[in-house]
Length: 63
Image (cartoon, rainbow, N blue to C red):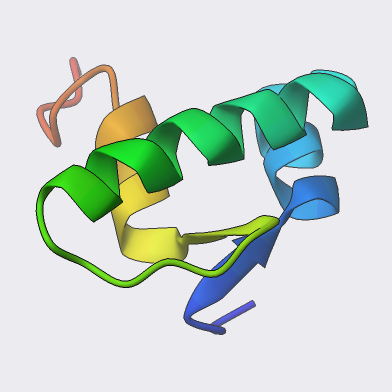
């Protein structure tokens, strides 16, 4: 999907965790975004920020 925000269902699927844990992840990420001065949507997280935070390789894949 190319929407701006991810729902808890999408976060849970991407991380392979429960929906309850996905809400905790969203809450934590939204708190970080709010501290940086960004507006947030309760129960959803910015897709680009989520992908940046969970990209353990930092865009550098091993070949």
